Length: 175
Image (cartoon, one colour):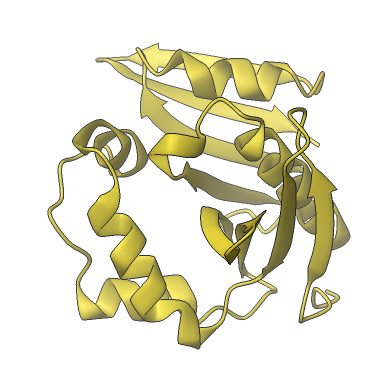
């Protein structure tokens, strides 16, 4: 398997004209990741982790920022502002141990940038990285009322299967 070129760096224009810069996450992003997590609304945290969490543990911060870009890929999106780049989103996927062509993915967009196309842009880059690594399926578990994620995946036009049980939807998208 070919490693994703690091530093992964690309630029994308949002529908409203905003400029996003994408790059691979780095261990030095640890403090910024925690600071941004602490600013998320309870509903954003709940949607991402399927539970309410008040903070990220040191072990979680290490796991989230020290990735190999083969079996665990994580990208950071930063929005260009007059003051400089500001954190906008984090997206990641982790390859399945049981099926190396499948991975679980997650995207978190800061609250005040949700609905601007940041998640869609992040998903596009995650798909590009996943395909480059031989991954054929992205999967996620979300609360069934979280229709934004389902709409986001359907908008790709890629085949999507949804199985809902007990208030949790298991989404599987073929690449």
